[in-house]
Length: 367
Image (cartoon, rainbow, N blue to C red):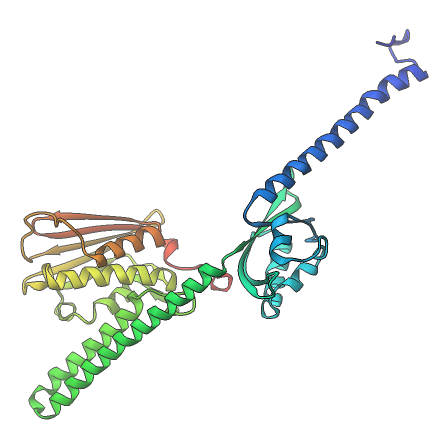
């Protein structure tokens, strides 16, 4: 401890100056040690991760890659610092990757993109790139931390599934076309049935359109609906059924926009409900009817499917068909919604609720 002068101030002498300087120097040394320890821990942590990890300065200058990056790419350490990382991408993906990265740097938005990254073998493998900004106490970006995940095997499996889906869909649509053609040929020999044949052909064509909505889709095959609504989609799904023209399927209530994001799970659900109702439920009876009520409340759209006038339900089925389970999974997993069945004696009641915003994209340009 050093003494104070008579006026309460510290004496300006070497001893006093040294007493003040030593703690400051110790703090600097402690900070340097803590920083080195932190960097060492980060190195161990990122090298233990299965993903490639990278980091940049606020301006996007890449200054760190973990061991997984160099193992995957096979490039010398430091050779992809700065902006050299973009040269590792497939030539067809480089401009798109740069555009996404510049957008994130200028807006602070999370970075996410799929691109083909050159493997040490020389082949290009599909990779999912993601990055988030690290901000200080006042919200300024001080660093970006990103990862690259090899998704090539999953991507190829998805492409194979898409090929199979398209082949199956093509065959189904061919069956519709053959049936429609047979009806047309058969009606030529009897002019009296031509109006009925034309009506039946129209229903088969509508069933083909409904199938296109309800079948599984990828990002490239999904239907483009444009400015459409949920009620408009339901009209397309129900149009093939004679009960719809007869007024036995009624849709009422609120309406919400819908596009390809929500069209497939919604089409799958109501196509399955209508098919089952025609085979076993209310629509299998001449007096049967179905009411579909849509209610928008608090950002959620509630949908109630109510059957009545069909065969009485004695008990809940012991097992559900594949189509019904698939429809339920589509609502719950693809849209994060709720799906409930109530087996009332007079007919099946299905209650569905999803966030209205999950049925469409606000900004298609960002998809």
